[in-house]
Amino acid sequence: MPAPIPATRDNAKRLSVYKQGLHQRPQLTDPATLKRIIERIGLLQLDSVSVVARSHYLVMLARAGLYNPADLDALLDSGFLFETWAHAMCQLPSEHYPWFDAYIQHKRQNKSQWQVDRLGLDLAPIAAQILATIRQRGPLSSKDFESERQGDGGWWNWKPTKVALEFLFDRGDLMVSHRVRFQRYYDLPERVRARHHFTLDKTIDDFRRWTIERGLRHIGIATVNHTADYYRQPKRAAAAILADLLKSGDALPVDVKGWKDPAYIHRDDLPLLEQIQARAHEPGLTVFLTPFDNLFWDRARDEMLWDFYYRIEIYTPKAKRIHGYYVMPILHGCELIGRMDPKVDRKRKRLIFNNLHLERGIKLNGALYRGLIAAIEEFMAFHDCDSFELHNCNRAPLARRLRKAFG
Image (cartoon, rainbow, N blue to C red):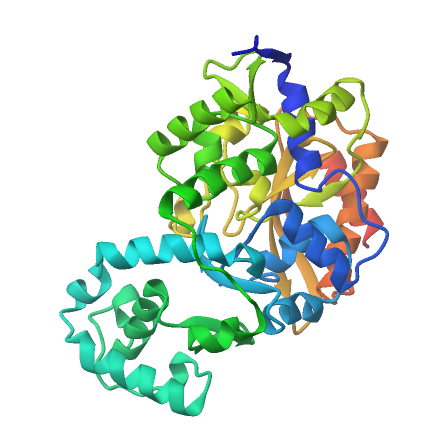
């Protein structure tokens, strides 16, 4: 095994920002550009919270700049993307489907049906009726099915047909064909995949190796745990695969100053690391990251790289929240400098920051002011807002500057 490549934490930050396409904006924001961004980061995590635009739209905004969200929706409708469980529920390039088919078949053989067991349902007749109906009528959503039976509250308020749809989706008996206002429409896999010519010959071992190698490429410099987290794979399997990648020379060891755990880089990224160490590819953006942004998935890594402690507070009682409901970290260059809690008042076309908090030690200067103002202007334009309102801010000079800029 070669000697570890020396690197600093700053090198790891800059490489990660570059690999995630957050260092600079593309010249165009057409559908081809959106495709390249998704291929670059691998997958888009979906989430239903809509106090501002839903997360996957904002992940793209941070990387592409102002674009037409309908162009992103069309990538699923056209078949360029498909949906499956990956890091969480995600949209991925359809060319990756053969590897995930192996994962779906592995889960199917495991015969896990905890949702059904918890509800105490006789699923077979419900599932059979759903499949027969979709086969006859084409793509349908959960609202197209009716059921009187309800659960006893919370998540279990799902109709039995909704549970059955999700169960059939998990097993690969159904796929998402498209969405309408974020509502999923399910169809038979053979119809969704009809636009592609897949060879479905991957194994679960192929899938795990593929996810670990791709996770390393998407992150830049990473430990075993970081790499495993990107596609949510078992850490023990990730460790074995990385050891094998080291033996083959596809991965190289990296000694990151201050990190206790061994780190790795894909051999194809070594020239890029050397360029970054020579101060090339300087990051120049100020952007707001959703709680579900790819750069920010691994909370332990956030602290290792940026000393940035973050926990989502959506499910925290209001009285116990520290920074707000939907807290979005702020990336300035290659540093996470703060966080804000936004809300869009769609009737008044107003962007509201309930809270804006800069981290300790972040200095106010012209570049920071300009970056934040530009990011707010872009966020307003994307949400079709024509006014801005700031409630709480932990830096009085910053609050004054922003209120003056948007007054």
